[in-house]
Image (tube, rainbow, N blue to C red; front, side, top):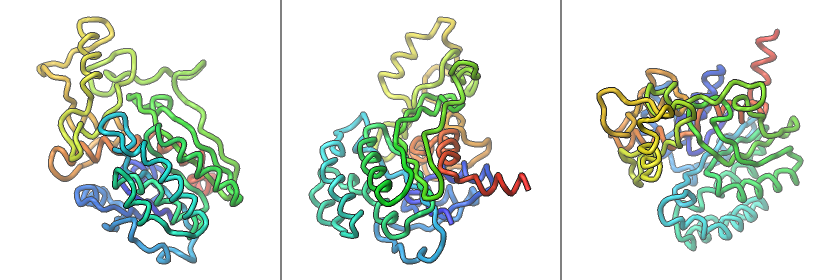
Length: 316
């Protein structure tokens, strides 16, 4: 059973494309409605309060993408100042000592402690394999997880992956952790942009407009805490304007702004056509922009061994 904490839609769609399913634990109502409408098993709950004992006695696999605003490039970046506290909470949880409440109260950003939450599940359930994803600045935390998991007998690796290297029409770098109790793991090798490989996918090949010879810049949740209508940041939009009128750019017919629609953002994230996102416009942008891109999720899951049994079943 694949248990998915902070369950957006990206990992689940990648699993479904391979014939697998997960049990998603998610608090946000719009995200839950999106998951349920897409056919994904969903429990609306506060992940930090949900008991792990409900899954004991089963073979468990674990996926987590904790919220990342405090660790991102924009905003106050209070999460970065909270890193020593997060490291301590993870170390404590790895020894069966739950100090989340005390350390969480001391954090400058109340969301920072959520990055330690997966360790509670790892300690209690010892999943067969683990995949986690966050913004690049969280790599040091994933490296701590990897070190702890290796001390428990796992094979584990942490590093930075760019979704554009796996066929996505968007440059999107993410810190990932991949671990397994059953096989040696390593970061997945790129499939696009290297010697003898297909080129990276250009933005215009996905959306019909934009950069013609390179992937799109990273799609965000829209620029505000509640989501918004500017998935591309101001600096990104200025760079786009400088490319206009050159062979590096394809004009957007009949539209005079650089704001991609929700459907275009979804395509740039690798989502299947027709997938419906619920909530208001801001919430939809958040659901799409916060998701792990499907090609990156698929590559990480394959590296963890998530598809090994399905592959054997097909071969048989």
